[in-house]
Structure formats: structure tokens, C-alpha cells
Length: 115
Length: 111
Image (cartoon, rainbow over all chains, first blue to last red; front, side, top):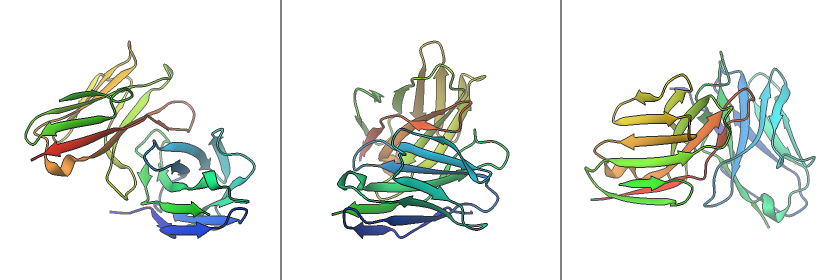
């Protein structure tokens, strides 16, 4: 069964540094997402992406965050200047191709630790 | 055993019993709902979904019930097994492409 893959599995960075989290969604999916989960808490929506542009974003997704689909397979989340409170698991997901109201397929996440 | 997902985040049941996990959703415009299972160190895994034109849907050992009047969703797991131990999240979607998750309920199955 096709999978969403995320790299790296764990990223440690210093406060103020830029990080890029990478994802390869399922190949025939058209809708892409980033979610984050602070340890022990719920899964929080960050952003959805379709047709090379952001569809929706949450209040968490401020100017420090950006997303990109640089080629036909990768989907990235960049955090420009990391803060301690950005420490969390970041999950990429994809769905489609027909509708965004279909099950999201999640990767196993990148654990981001900001020191 | 039964839980209210937002007010009682843990549920402990005996192996073989039925489990009921509840979720109160917030947006009356939501028309698509999903239950996810999350095991430690993994991403959420799809269990079952339901659209707002239905009030019940059954899968293998799982049933989802939707009550739109009171904005309530439940997941029933029949004959709960140790492998069902995980955190369960409900998620709601609608016209906007921003599926939102509930707080989650941790299910523990005692042998």
C-alpha cells in the first residue's frame, strides 16, 4: 500500500535557526497538509495545499511558516526562525484525488526539537 | 466501557468487552467525519469515516454513529483487543479544506 514518507524522523535545531521538513505524499494524491502535535496533545491543523497554492491555513501558520512543492513529488514545510514552542511532532498528510473530503493518509512524522 | 472524549480523555476496558469512544464536534457546517487511531510514535491511521447524510456506518469490528442534532460522534469497537490500545481522535471536515481534530481519548485494553 502506498505511504506518505517524511524525513528526517528527528530534527534538533537551535532557536532562531531555519528548518525544512520534507514529505513525499502518495503519488496520485492532489491535496497536501501539514499538522503538528505537541507531546501528549491533539493533532493541530497547520495548512492545506492544492494546485500549487495554500488552500487554508490556521492561526498557528504565521509568517514564520511556509510550504512548497518544489517538484512533482516533494512537499516541504519551512520554519524560518524556530522558537522553543515550535518543538513538536510535525505530520504530513495527503488525500484525493477526487475530493479533499476523503481520508487523510499520514506519514509517521518528524520530531522537531528546538533547544 | 464508555467515554466522553473531550471531558474524560482515558478509557480502560477489559479485553473482549465493547468500547465506546465519544466526540462532540464544534462546527454545525461540518459534513464529513473521520475516526483515527494513533499508536505511540506513529501518525494517525484511518479507521472509518461517515458523511452527514448518514447516521451510522459499520466496518470490521467498528461502528461510527453520527447525531447531527447534538453534534455528537461515537466510535464503537466490538470485542476490544490489546492491539486496539491507542489514542483515538475524531476529525471533522466541511466546505473548507481544513480537517480539524478533536482532543483524543486514550484507550487501554486490560488482558
